[in-house]
Length: 489
Image 1: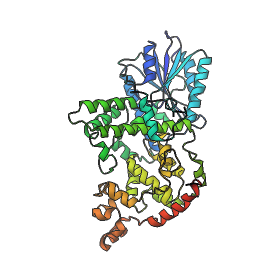
Image 2: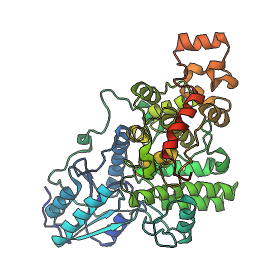
Image 3: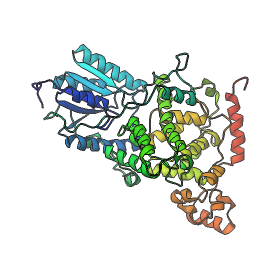
Image 4: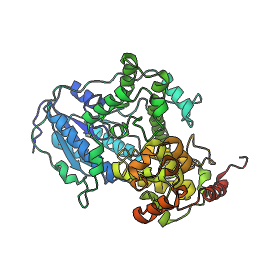
């Protein structure tokens, strides 16, 4: 164990959802103090109401922490890993190390804020400094306000107000060297002891083939997107059959890259590229950062966003309990190829194209009348980018119960959405191989294929027929949703 005899007294950097070394304000603050730096991570499943990560997020977290360990080691530092209640663990570590200060970057969920407040109070009462910083957002949730000084409820005015506050600060570089501390600390464990990886069975083969977690992977993904896909982004972003999106969401979720880095890199690419993107492409891409900001704004001001309808009138929604239909949806066996392709993409890769997420979520909520919270929980467990703000806000948007939500009567037709967004059927063929032999005019409605093809699909490959008729489901949903209408609607 390291003793408390080091002089000057060390500063602890408490890593959480900010697993990077560049543009990390807490780390930058620690480095400017000129004291030895103790980098720490606490895997917290014990603090009250802190939501444990799902299976796919646990897989990503393991590899992201491993990458952070390597990055620190290359600079002379080391990551000390612990399991336990966050505030108690970090306060105990500060005492053991006789740390002069503990710094961290903020989180915005209510339970996490409570943990951080308790840690800050305990540290300061013990005579230690405790400081927190913004590393996750372009603007703090309390900085963007309506003209009346209230939280914002609609995206477009929110984003205009956020941008009116000025350009985000320039990102800061990673430190070249770190004055680390030697030895081990009470309660410290190796990364493997967190038991984050699936083993019985190991279902993560598709995740390994798809992703490179860590700060280096985030930089590579951003660079590839800016070089290859930002130009034309506005036209291609809704096409799951094309490589048109950034796929930065899991890297942002775990803080392997900051929104400031993305913002400034996108602007630089637009100015310096030989074939620059259009202003529409750039604006549309940056608006996706804006939606992320808006989601955190909603979460901060509505801490129960993942569990309670933002619009209370949706408490009257007559949800159905249909275990068989729910399982068909989860496994990508609804009989609607576009929905099934999305759900299988999720199962295989831990990610789903945003447009398909909307259609798949709408199908669960409106075709099956299953509570949006059931879908939110499934995505929380299976998405590598399961974000506490974006996941909940997006599900409520589709349900119609959220802020700036889709109109209650909007019910995506999964056949027409597939024909529009996957016109040749390449996306469906990739994830629903049972249908690979169908021509484009039948692949999104296999029941319309000729008798020979249809028989082959049903008997040899086992693809199901639709579990619900679209027109009947739509009528049922509209009748159910009528219960949530405002009196004057």
